[in-house]
Image 1: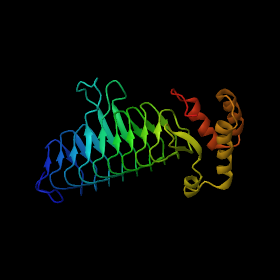
Image 2: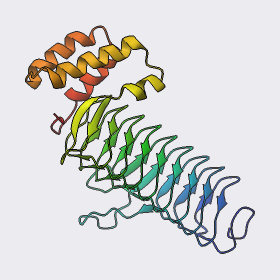
Image 3: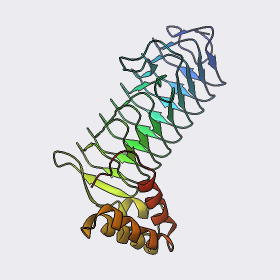
Image 4: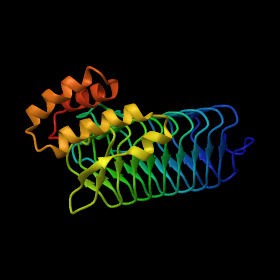
Length: 262
């Protein structure tokens, strides 16, 4: 397929790869077998895309990204695992996205409309939602789950098996070693610590004053009142009767296997 319209003559594309209509591939990019790329996706220069990898529509992958590589896991023995990327994502320079592992789910999944800025790393078996922003040098260890609308600032990192709830905000250089509830802001102080809710982000996404007030009350119950977690959960259950947002927060807490970041 090299030399086809939109495909630079120096690009190498395995005959078994499948590219949709209007896919553009820059110079010196390599696309391996068992790779599917949806229509309208643009791939820059010097990228490496290996399979099994499925990439959706209208993504923009800038130069020197490494997509679909083997998981960086000593237990990996070449089993068939996958990377699945949704639609309209922007993946900037030197981003690395690894496939899953047989010991995990076998799948790394990235949703739609995300921004992965330069040098972001997403390890094996991670699950990323929609509309997230990963600033430069953001790093996810294996098996991390990221909800929708999460923002990771530069040089932030998340420990393996942790979950970051929807609308959370991780500050610059934050190192997270526990589950971060939805709506929560985390600041860097050796290890990340909760520092309020992401009020500005919620306003930008259309949360009205009543919803934000309910979330603030829930945050104070969980982090400011000095309550044991079991008692805080009881109070959150009462508050959740009047707020779907608090219900989502409580469901997140109750479904976790790792300790909550407190």
